Length: 346
Image (cartoon, rainbow, N blue to C red; front, side, top):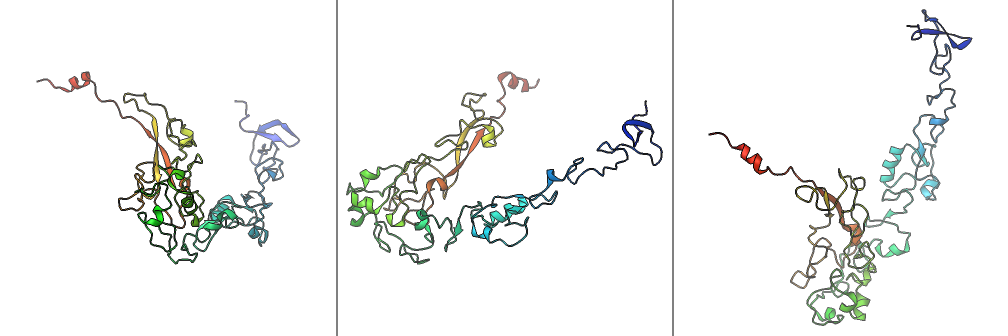
């Protein structure tokens, strides 16, 4: 060897290697300073640095504090925050702590939905809403209030949209607002034409989804992702409205492979995908909310989209969810030659 692996250094010439390091001899530190003992490394681990590369938003190196989603917010909680920079609520915080606080509707500006600056708060029925949005006025305290506007009264619209009434689908109060007075089933937005079903008077009582106008939903509860009432379309796992997942990639779905068209593998179905409904009150049998509009007794059938003429009914696209699932074929069955090989001598 040439002694380079243990050579010392000369303090007056850092480029000149001296003799092998004796006891208590000098050597180059990480900043190439002879006998420097790494004293020129800042708190961020940078030679001759000034700590700027790792300083937190609180001014402390390596604090891990970052500008969070509430910085600069106009939320009164942020504007009235009393505390130290770096504390949750100051706009500068540790990410995990901020996320935990924001999920709880805090953090300085987060709504009850865990989203910074969403403006959503719990109403008297503990529903998370943006109560400052005038379009949500009909929803405030609606989920626990009766049609009479009184919280927890339990009063509902009947089938003729009369508050606390007793009208049914086979009563004159309902038939009188139908184009076809002999209609034997209630309105189903997923299989019937709204204008052809209700008279002008009926359309003043019922919205395009068959909900009572008095609830204030304005036809929003049965709109598909295509913006059409009663289309029954939702977004599949790769963002396609009404899609079946056949165009999805592994990156979009988290599945091991991209979805491909049928025809691959010995089954002809290897790596094919389908959109499977995963959320809803009941199993999703058909896209239609009601297969025939009635349970046979003149009442609307209860299926995966079940709540009708009831405060707090969810929007179709908020309630209907699904996921992409992939078929991966098993090994092919044994061929004739293999089966013949199973037989023993005898």
